[in-house]
Structure formats: structure tokens, C-alpha cells
Length: 134
Image (cartoon, rainbow, N blue to C red; front, side):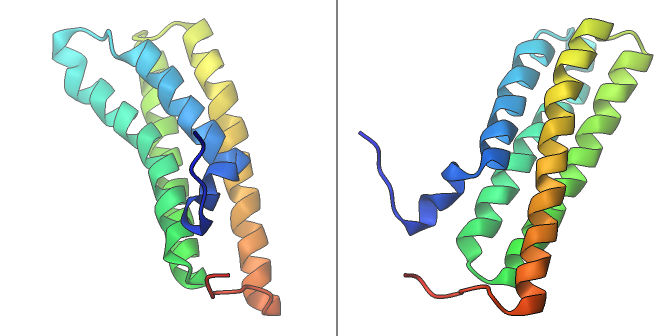
């Protein structure tokens, strides 16, 4: 059964859906890291998870300024995630193929997030944002 209301509208956003897929893919590849790297891999998994969580939380705030703040936090988490993955690749802790598979989806998600931030900024500038629950 699909449960829908105005507060769950973020689930229709392609960027949120891709952020969830990025989290799932990251868990698939990083959950088997050796014991001494559990904290490091866990931080990367959390950074990936943070992208979608912040998109959702910002959406649910309804204030355009708060929404943009959370989208920017999501973008910062995206940068943190990329840095983690790049480090894993440089240290040969993930294969080139794993890095490319994850980075392809991450790059897509990051660009969608940048586009959403630009779009919301434009709505704020031209006053077309509706902050009421309709």
C-alpha cells in the first residue's frame, strides 16, 4: 500500500531516489571492510545516507530558506562522501571498478542536487515558492 501525503513528496524527487540508491550501493561495497577500517567505512556509509536524509528533512521544513540550508548540507555530505571514496581508491581499499560504479551514481546524484539547489534559489529570487500546506 502506498502512503502519500504532502510531507512525503520528497520521495518523488529523482535526486532523493538516487541518493537512496547511492546509500544502498555504498553499503553493498563497504560493509565488508576489515575490522580496522569499520569506522572509516561506516563514516563513508553515513555520508552517503546523509545526502538523502537531508534532502528529505529540508523538504519537510516547508520554509524555502530552511530547505536550501538542508540541501546545502546534503551537498556538503556529498563532498565528504566523494573524498572518502577517493581516499579508498588511492589506498587500494576499493577496486577501480567499484570506485567507478559508485562514482558514476554519485556524480549523477550530486549534479541533480546542484540543479535542485539552483532551481530552489530561482524560486526564492522570483517569489514563486509556496510555503503553505495545500
